[in-house]
Length: 286
Image (cartoon, rainbow, N blue to C red; front, side, top):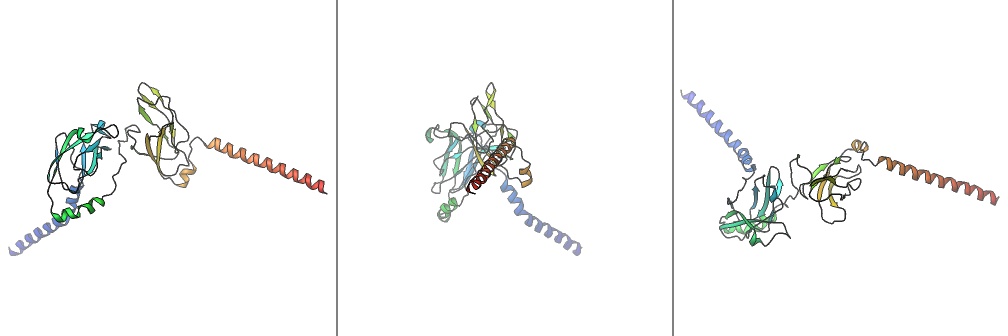
């Protein structure tokens, strides 16, 4: 019986050890879960110096681009699409006293009004911290990485949904920029396009077909309406291997070959003329 009891005790100890070993990973998984979506009037708790991620329901796309403001934030946040939710990041100032503070939404600058006129959204309950944590707070805030401004939209959504709706395309790929209301018979320009596609369509939706240049280097590219300075869209060109780039077709190969061939022929004709002229001059000298 004693042996059996020892066996049971050993099994129990082993189970407890396994639980202790797996606990950190379980807690890590729990910490990795995204914060809950915040509806009007919700309250979130925060510490001075903490960077909050505020999530709005994904069925409110009209909020995208709005500023999220509060007198306790170091600077306003911006609501961006992070499929499947819309989120904003903001840091609570280190000198914020304990209390409950209003968070509001307002239109992007310069269209948005003063922060005091922002529409109420949620509240932040700032807790008290000790002197040591408050002294370390500025260094904590300075160490935060820059906010990621690129948005993640569903692949099924037309592109672009916003100026930071960055999709990834391959050299030679045909893409379909889409716009609502504005842009009929207007052209787009981008250094990664083979030309300037013109927007066409019916009713309120216009589209164009643009081709990514085969010689476009990997990286981030901007799209503008011809004659406008404002960036309308952005996209990323994916890196490809040499074989893929060599087989790439973007519709410019024929004209490029013709130009190269024509230039070579012209240079050949010039060379032949110089050669004949040189022979004639040598004949005169003799």
